[in-house]
Image (cartoon, rainbow, N blue to C red; front, side, top):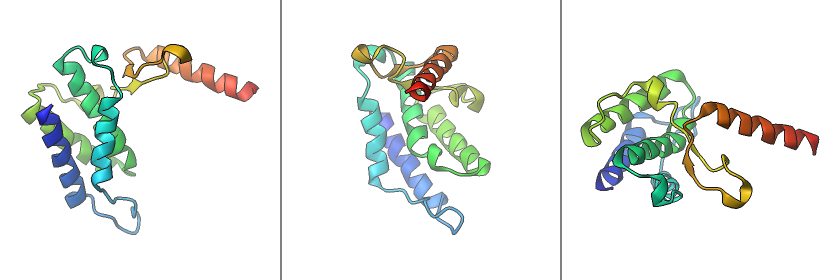
Length: 143
């Protein structure tokens, strides 16, 4: 847990130092609220859905990506973020394979189960995610 706190702050500092606002990207302003959003996401998960360190690392990367990377508007900035986060994964979390194709597929969500029993969990089955989203879209379009 200590590594996740330190590395979240490290990424926050790097984003603030290297991804500066410009006329084409005025929304590149990062503040401590962004750090708190990462931890809000981490705290949405019940401990039984994060059974080991590898699972927690995937959750941390997912939350970090949702808060920081989703704001980025071009591929170069997104690649910069993935490299910076990958470096943190190698250094602090001892992750050997930081292939962006693998890490960018990680998703946590709370819509895989029925409404009355929803939990925030890792979505490992992408076809189930797609079906849930298509069903929700169809239901919305019919109402």
